Image (cartoon, rainbow, N blue to C red; front, side, top):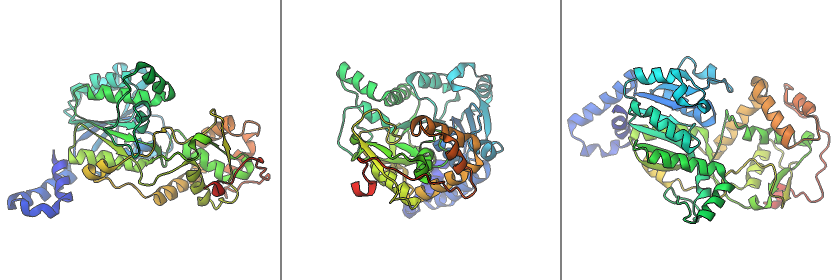
Length: 409
């Protein structure tokens, strides 16, 4: 493979004294060949969401040929951005890969591919199906984008959490208890176990809650609308007491793409990496940062509650911050600074309110169902579609027991 050689040359030029003359002459030439003729074909399962679209962009920028298998729905600007740059296989993953004729034809006609990058095998059954059906492609490596939620179903360890610290409890009762508390984490760990047991060379990237543009879970965008139109919504952020001081990590979507490309270029195999930002968060801290981005730190307030059943969006994993030391050392991973993430993400969703109508309506629906059930979303929709984006204040009336987020910090 050209890319690992090229990556080694670019990264470790200071070791050139240890390379003979002919190698030093050959390596730049191989890098040039990689640039001109491409760096191998990648099959991506998914690719339409936040981390997926960022990874497609990173792969294309690194000169890989990309084929994406998904349901071909147009989330945000997916079609506009990628339709002319990648090959597409239209398959509904939930219906099963075995019934996808486009995939079957692809497998019959495709040569050995460089890698599979999987964003969709979110259960053990889905992963088992994927590795069985895609094994004939004989990929050099199978990259699975997993989640830090797997640590929630493992024996607790002190933070920052390292990759090797995933061990399910031996007690069946305790294991079932952990699984019930975080079904998603249990499913993702099951997918990891199925991939490791498949015999395929693998790389697993464990991400914290992923933030950034084009999030098809609409989590950040909900909070951003809440902040932008705080006085109109007239409801404080709900912060359960258990999350008040809980530290957690976040992952930027663009950093996932960076990590995938780095893993491919360096040729690593059978390794697991945590991928996250360097900055640590608590939920009040994150909300304050978002409020400050809109100069609303003095008007935002939070309702700190003892209730367990509340509408909170972050975090989805509760074991603490992630160690990214291994990714730094082996992948040369450099997480995007928080200030950049905040600025770019806020800007994207500020522009998205007028550009992406369907997605905006989904955000309004989620807020209407969970945050403002007694207030018509009509005024909020009208405020969001104004060209200046400004809310029409109705006057906030925080409850007596609500604390200012700033005061709490």
